[in-house]
Length: 220
Figure 1 (cartoon, rainbow, N blue to C red):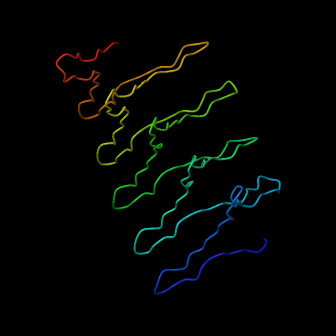
Figure 2 (cartoon, helix red, strand yellow):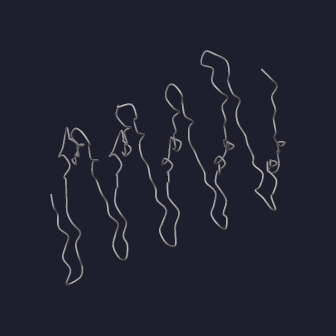
Figure 3 (spheres, rainbow, N blue to C red):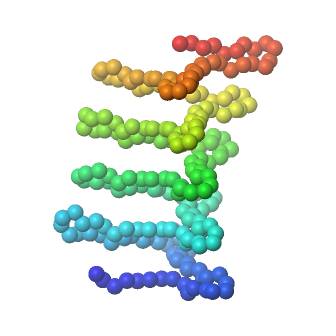
């Protein structure tokens, strides 16, 4: 192998350790300078793997680990785009993308928040979709499920539009149309029970608190 390059600050036994800053130049009449970091390429035959690129915070033997912040900063005419993605593959599967928190042996598991920006006109959208198939096969599965439990109840799954002043948003649970063949199947039900009552299925419309308003209809 070639030599190793290490950039770091010294350790400290009685105060905070030193910082390491890597910055590019400021552009006064053009764009600011870029910072480009990449792991090494692999050119050997036989399925050699490119180098790993790791960004992680420091651990702690007596407290919490450090934070990792990856973001585009505030700007006047629009903040920058941020892309977290795996690369394409000529042959074989593309890479896996995992977004999650670590496990804990004695406390609550960490939360994962995905939210769009607040807008003075319209709030930002969140769009999640499974992969399409272009070879006559089946598109990817999209699964939303709660966590299981080995000694209690599983978690809740909540799909709803939130409260609003002039009307809450629309929620659609539907399969797509089909050009040839049957369209998809929609199943609403509860799981079975081996030692108690199975769950209920309740379909209802919202109540109204005004004297002249009608409750919503339920059409099946």
